[in-house]
Length: 285
Image (tube, rainbow, N blue to C red; front, side, top):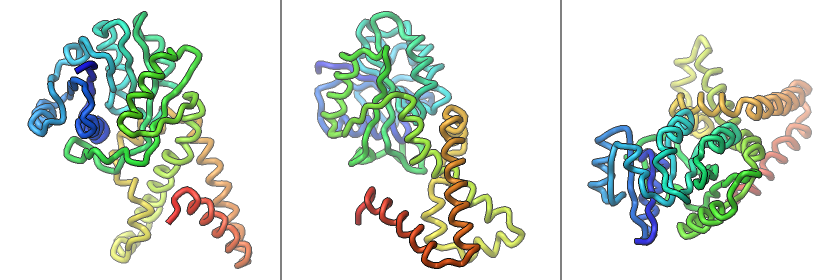
C-alpha cells in the first residue's frame, strides 16, 4: 500500500467513493470516519474501508489525501478541526456543490506545507446515507476541481491523476465559474422543482391534484425530494449565482407566458423546439 486516504463522511457521496476505490482495487489504505458509530460499523462490515474511527484527528493522521464528504455547512468546521493533524504534503479536497466561499476560507486555514483543492463531483441522487451509496454513482459524471492563484499545481495534478485512476473525468474551473455553471444546471433545477411542488401544494384543491399526479409531475419534481437542509446550504452559500439564474429563468418563463397569452402556436412551437434540441444535445437518446 503506497498511499493513505481518508474519507470524512460515509454518506451517499463518501460511501460511493469508498466503494469505487475498493472496486478499482487501487493500492491504497482507506480510512473512513463518520459522526455515527453505526455508519462506521457498516462500512467496515461491508469492507468499504480498511480502518474506521469516529475520531476525526486520528482519521487524518498520516493520510496523504483526505476527502471531506460532509454537508456544505460542515466542510470548513471540519477542516478547522483536522488542520493541525495533517502530515506535511497532505492534500485535502471536498465534494461541496458550492466552491467560491469554501475555497476562500479553506486556503486561509491550511497549515504551511499542506494543500487544499476544491472539488465537486457532478453526481448525486435525492437519497442520502451509506445505504444509498453505490460505486457506479460517478459513472459518466465529471468531477470538477477548482483552480486559484494559490492552488498548488503538484497537489492539483496528483488529485487529478488519482481521480483518473478511478476512471472519472476531471474538469478544472475557477471557483467562481463553477458556482455560476452549477447554479444553472443543478441549483436552479432544485429551485424550480421545489417551486413547482409548492405551487400545486398551495392550491385549495391540492388533494385532487395529488390524486391525478403522474409520471410527468413525478419526474419533473424528483429532486424536490432531496434533504431540505442540503438545499438551504447551497442556496445560502451560492446566493449571488442562484439569484442570477432565478432571474434569467423568470425572464425565460415570462417569454413563454407572453407567447401563450398571444395564442401563437408557431412561436410556442419554436420555443419548445429550441429547448428540446439543446436538452437532447446534452442527453442524447
